[in-house]
Image (cartoon, helix red, strand yellow):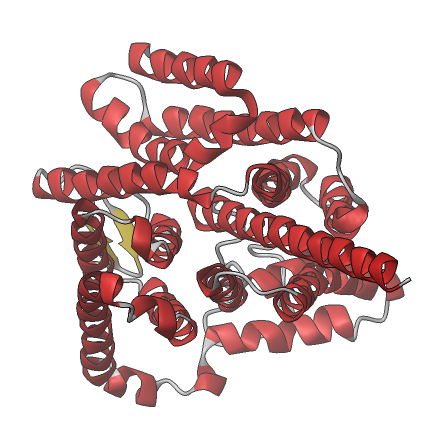
Length: 434
């Protein structure tokens, strides 16, 4: 209990001390909360579930407090109207579900994750210094590395993937998504990296490869392609050529793994066709139950938000979907079932708005292409990530939301300056001509 209390007091102290600037330490805080439960359980008599519950609530509280601090100090524009409508919807909908308490617990967590996007946008649009995140990301990758190596060697902590028990330290498998986004962000800051950063990138990619879940590796490949493809001029400058060679070496390792892994599992994928997979049947069932529902309110507002396990497809006998009371395995399926067309529509519309903002800022202003590349890489990876459920997992969502908001805030601020300078130049030109 002493370790837990000390950590909570330490975080609260630093939040009070740094106020809005605490946001740059979010990656370290999020990763540490993932690690602490099993660590405390190992060296104390406190049950792991108690630690997880307390720290999960504490993390949500810190995210919301940080959001409130930034919201109070800085003016909020109308750019986030759609996001706030979604947040209000997620806040109200649980009270109209079969299990309001369970639904609300998850909803408030998701709200806190999304709030980091808004907080990141506001903060970095004021300070325009994304390099502030490099050191905290470096530390978070080191924590993840030490956890994976030390705890795994000691066989402390495990997670389940299907019927297999994976010894990977105290980090849950879904934490690998947050690490993947951190690696992408770090790689995009090529000219600011040190040798230790490349060592951490290499070792953490190796850990991702050793994990059973393949989606983070796939997303990492997609992100690397986007970053390298859009940054050719930056990465192949003479002063960056050494770092670029290291970058390419790391990329080749990921690609090599992809081909080897694909070959080793080809038989498995050919045996289980796409239209025979439970993930495919989720959408078939939800289309019948929600979109084509006789009750128009069910189609528009959905059914039970975040408490779908054992509730959907009750009248359909398809594979093991109902037999095992299988939960939905897609963010989009979860939102469609729990939020109906409105819930899913709002979430998808945010992606569309973000992509349109990206196109607008990149067409109207010119700035460093690494900002554009990493923003697009994270945005696309997040969209693809949505087909693998992780909407309710803090490390898998809070970290990339923060990066995405910070990147967009920086891009917005830089483009605004360029437009203001252009307007000032045009105004002076008109005065001179007159």
